[in-house]
Picture 1 (cartoon, rainbow, N blue to C red):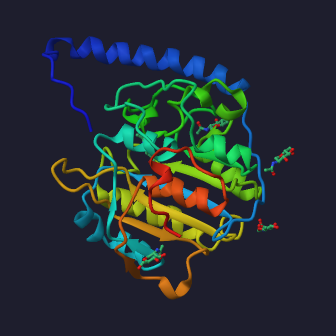
Picture 2 (cartoon, rainbow, N blue to C red):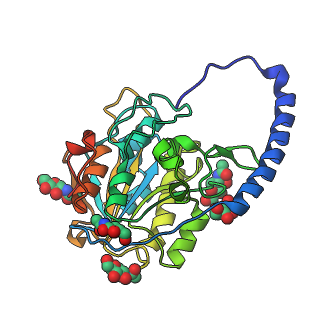
Length: 311
Ligand SMILES: *[C@@H]1O[C@H](CO)[C@@H](O)[C@H](O)[C@H]1NC(C)=O
Ligand SMILES: *[C@@H]1O[C@H](CO)[C@@H](O)[C@H](O)[C@H]1NC(C)=O
Ligand SMILES: *[C@@H]1O[C@H](CO)[C@@H](O)[C@H](O)[C@H]1NC(C)=O
Ligand SMILES: *[C@@H]1O[C@H](CO)[C@@H](O)[C@H](O)[C@H]1NC(C)=O
Ligand SMILES: *[C@@H]1O[C@H](CO)[C@@H](O)[C@H](O)[C@H]1NC(C)=O
């Protein structure tokens, strides 16, 4: 969340609206052209891990722990996994949390503004690639694979897909490589990859600004998460010794301890632990620590090296 000061624009609203329509039409044409030639890749691999063979991050937005814990859809999800009761986000606002979760540090990004992180900054992708562990991102309503901008709903103009919720897109080491951009995909591709049994071993899933709760509420986000996950939890193309982390990027309250409601799910979680809680101190850096430990990837020597892994 980042609020720019409101500038007096009331007299200009009509011209802004027509500029928006014009912008949308131009954007649609160039997007259609880029979509037609965008490279899309869906690599797979079967590198055996210690505790799981596939890791899935799913991130929702801006919700305090108690509010999430009180939601009936979240409770239904939690009943099928382990609730982490002492899991903290890194900072505020959103973007540095996403960036840190794949880079082991925030890389001096402190706001939600457009970020480009120098080529020399390593990410989890370097470690996954070195071990031949396949990876992809699935970002809802990304207009085509490898798109680097922000995208609004073409009918309503509402914020839809945003870069700040895409953890890898700000890293030059990713965007300078067409084969990596080709693994930044949308939900159309997620369902194609799922149906073709071509999901990767590491993935990061970001719902759009409606479904992640950012522009709505935890009620919407939790209903989306429950409806998204329920069919996947019994789909053998998704569940094959799979560990899912459902979490929130940060709390809404900037004065809180930033403890976010987080659940570990999937067939890699022992069914005897379903519906239990775990109060070990974890944070977003635990994600990298867990993945690195599972596949013996080494680490980036950042906060990933010292965070506590889930397993
Ligand atoms: C499940 O994983 C194993 C090895 O990790 C692989 O050989 C098998 O093909 C996978 N099954 C499906 C349905 O993807
Ligand atoms: C990764 O794949 C490449 C090409 O197939 C191979 O040469 C390399 O040994 C593999 N690395 C590991 C760690 O398995
Ligand atoms: C998703 O990405 C694919 C691959 O670039 C593209 O063909 C498709 O039109 C996109 N879907 C939506 C709904 O934008
Ligand atoms: C987000 O996706 C849902 C469908 O999953 C759709 O109903 C909603 O309109 C989308 N949000 C925006 C802003 O386009
Ligand atoms: C939960 O807590 C214990 C420590 O009491 C720890 O050893 C265990 O591996 C934790 N994690 C999970 C995901 O169960």
